[in-house]
Length: 199
Length: 199
DNA sequence: GTCTATAAGAGGATAGAC
DNA sequence: GTCTATCCTCTTATAGAC
Image 1 (tube, rainbow over the protein chains, first blue to last red):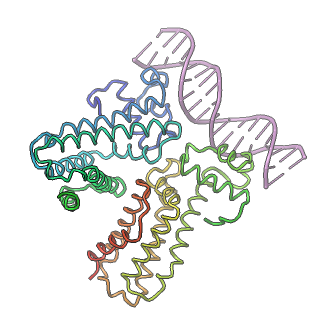
Image 2: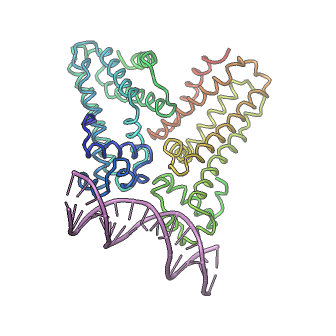
Image 3: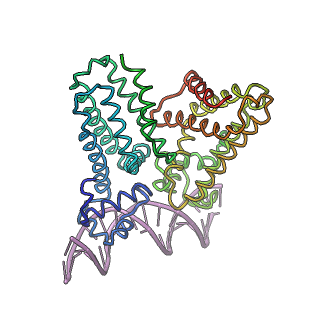
């Protein structure tokens, strides 16, 4: 995430909270449990984070920004290769990102499916925002390509939906069945998807 | 569920709790909120249910038993038709059950993925139990069939796993994308599955 | 920056009247 | 069966000392 190498109290609180919010949930995680993990008292936590809600939002944003940065740095998106190959590499890299550590994605899934009532509005807004940020990056990468005529233009949105659906399917399988998806499976499924959308 | 037509205080508590446990979660739902929905005081709830945990378990069991009863009553499982047709009808009926009201399945998913720490052991046991009950019904139905030689015997467990995977995939799509799956889609996916497993 | 102490309230659960 | 009143514990959050 933002500063994985630092070991400041601020970061320790961040990671302990992430872990507990993921495993036990927002409501079932209390400030004292977090503090016990870190080895501080409650008042110290409040020195760094204004409230439990703000602490949660920092974590949520941290996870999403880390993901957006990862997507943005994928070299294949900038190279002048065919759209088909470009998008395959993107999907493959995204799955690699999740295989390496599925916990961040599980966190997002948890709070997307079952947001705590008191912060559900904020979570919904954040989810929509980061989702559209990711879409922008993908759409930019397609429209900047010399090969974009591979696509029937009207179908791009449709395709993006299918693409996300496939990705989600793989991700849910990883989360629920605890299985790590390999490149071969990704390639096979993706080829099937491409046939249905490309010219 | 057990007694959908009754309107006793006991049942009112049951349904109000189901709704709140599903929407807000176990930890975020408190006894007083449930009582407010029903129009009673906390002590009245404790007259019917020993504790918050037991109330939850009654609901969990109620949902699962309703489902098991539904599966058990599917006529096709008892008829002497081909295994392929039998299992297709089973899948179709299961999807119909969810399409009619996805909330029960969402409840099970919620507590399967994110069980409250204090009751996670019990939930895990219950999940395993009802899962194996369902498997028994399906396996019985296959082995009682005159047409069971359609199957390569060693593959039945494998098939059951694939079958559940397909079902889960459809269910997650219904829950996450809020889409109702129609029979045509079920048929198509199921034909693909059958090709991979049958002789 | 980190602590002790504590306010202010919410939560699960029970006793006992009617 | 349902109520009022209450217990006791846990929770978020703050005040103020060091």
